[in-house]
Structure formats: structure tokens, C-alpha cells
Amino acid sequence: MKADALITPVRLWSAQEVLVRPSPVPEAAGVYGWHFEQAPHEELPAGRLLYVGIAPRYMANRSSAQNLRTRVRYHYRGNAAGSTLRLTLGCLLGLELRRVGSGKRMTFGKAGEAALSQWMAHNARVCWVEHGEPWGVESEFIARLDLPLNLDQNRHNDFHGRLTKLRAHARQRARELPIGT
Image 1 (cartoon, rainbow, N blue to C red):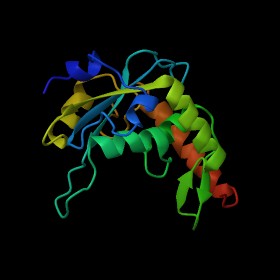
Image 2: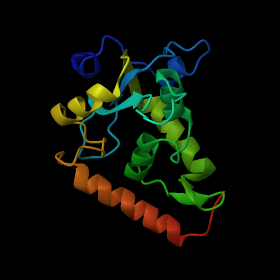
Image 3: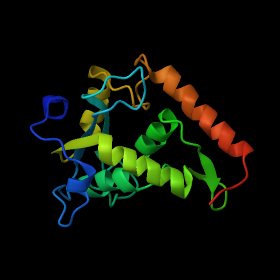
């Protein structure tokens, strides 16, 4: 599978287009790529691929119900507890991470998640490629491409250290605050 389909896609899809029913995102396994019209951080470029993800994740002991449609839609409208992309974007945008529920989960709270969803609706665009075993190409893409928003397997990226510290600081701050809603 060639990375070109994610780097220079034929089409990029907005939140409005992805969240309609029926959704254009296939209920299939594959790799998805995120581009941003406005970069989430001053040190990052706008208008290019900054993050790749896969659906489903490889799991030796059980099967995953995730597919391109469920993951892409979740990134657009879910929360930071279930989306590392949302966690990263929210931290870069300066949203306050909070412990919620029992205190084990961390999100940006109702207002913060809504603000993040709105920011993504205006700035985030996604593309995807179907692939039967996406976990087989994810490592290759992360090794070959400049993907500053990917942390896993990406220590070689120049932005990795800054993003890791920023997320760790947000988590530490959330642990010091009372549990939110």
C-alpha cells in the first residue's frame, strides 16, 4: 500500500460530510490520515498530513468491532478518553484536561470537547484507504513519513518530545484538579 493516497489524497472529507447518514466512510478495515487547514500548533505546518491511524487495531486474543467509519466518526465527535488524536489536539490547543466519572478517564469536559469538535469541524480533514491488515502498514508509514501528531513508534520525529511533555503535563494537571463532569 502506498502512502501517496494519504499524503496527497484525491479527496479530503470534512466533519459535516463524514457525520451524515449514510456516511461515505466505509465500514471496512484500513488506514486514515488527518490533514489540518489550520495547524493546531505554531510549530506545525498547515495543509498537510500530520497524523495516521488504523482501524481495527491488531488484537491477538479477540476481534475488534472498530472499522474506518467508527474510528473516523469517533475522532470527529467523541472525547479525549477514546481518541489519542483528540487528546493531542486538545492539549495543543490549550484546552484543560479533567478527570471525569470515576476519575480514571480524562476528557476536556463537556464544553472543552464541544470546542474541540467545533475546531475540528472547521480545520480537520480526513482521508482513508481500505486495507485488510492496516497494522501491517502503520509502522512503515510512521517510520517513513513526517507525522508529528503520532506518538506511538515515532520517537524519531522532531516534535515527539515536545508533544509527549505537553500531554504528560496536561495529565498531571488533571490529576491535581477535582473530578469534573
